[in-house]
Length: 138
Image (tube, rainbow, N blue to C red; front, side):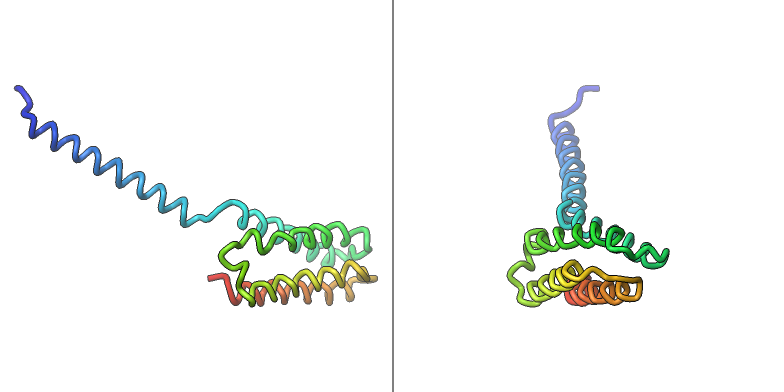
């Protein structure tokens, strides 16, 4: 049974529509997920904060336990504006980032001497995180 040119054209159009729809869905999913850079910054910050919390809960609050994680958080604090480009010129975001870095600078300048002091320092850092997330995370 010979195929007509109209039938071939219809089949090609349907294949083209299917491939186009599939590519559109893949692209939309990729755009919705965002880039790896801001996700990575937040993931590492979350892991470091979790480790600091665990140290306090386990009563391991010597400067040698806390300082490396505080330093990592401070270094990541330098990447906040570049990682979140749409907000880098937003005054609220800049203020939150500055407060986060200031809390870490204070904790590094005078490392907590016990778990009570570590808890206070961590609360200050967490408050900075929560304030920013309250303004920008949806």
